[in-house]
Length: 183
Image (cartoon, rainbow, N blue to C red):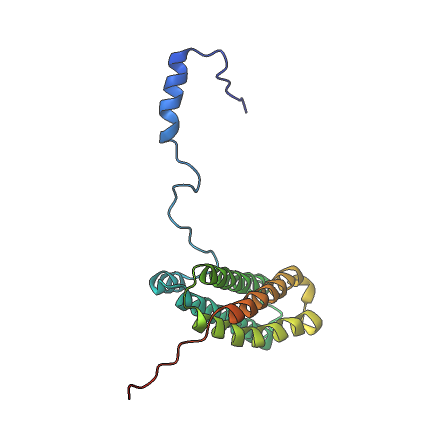
């Protein structure tokens, strides 16, 4: 591959190059928001339609829970002749990790912007109580652990990191105001 040098080029050539350069698409700078690979079209639509940060956190927690349930199903119905099982397991673990990471990111954004994310924090708290013990159990006793070990370690780490963010949010997010009945 040849590199092009404009050193010593005529001023007209420099102007031509400079006028063409803005027409070249710039990577992701001007691109539309990228679809998350681990979300289905329906899930991506729900996230987009939710708008506010709190409901989006709840959705990501729900989608993470769905991935855990699918993992549980996969391990309950082991078919030794299934060629794509390992691929599905790794895909589910990656999807779970993506959902948890995005939920944790949204929690940080919600705290920063002082948004009402209490429902999202509650959803994540209850989910993490279920997710982390299950994932740790897989790390100790999971069938064919070596085939998904790296993705499982990532999922556990993401869950532990999210738990820290959730704890921080629970402390920093004020409780809902109590409305008094007019007397």
